[in-house]
Image (spheres, rainbow, N blue to C red):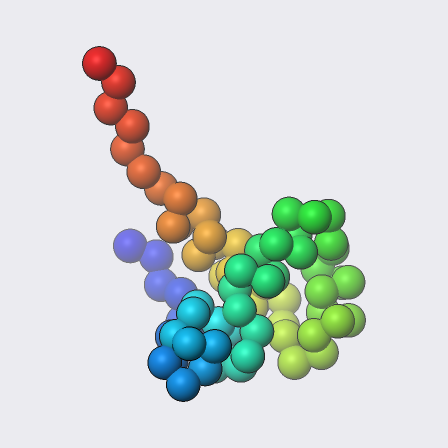
Length: 73
């Protein structure tokens, strides 16, 4: 299992959604920006408190969440 030490869950922050390092920056927002073509540099400019590793872990966490086994037949 991967370790996502920059992904936090706190019921008092964003209703417990996965966020970056306890900040009010949900993983879903970062992943959504990447999906819409934003570069790391653009995201870091928009969110100056983020670090490149935060973005990498957000993407890795999203990838980890989508792992599933499909059984056909």
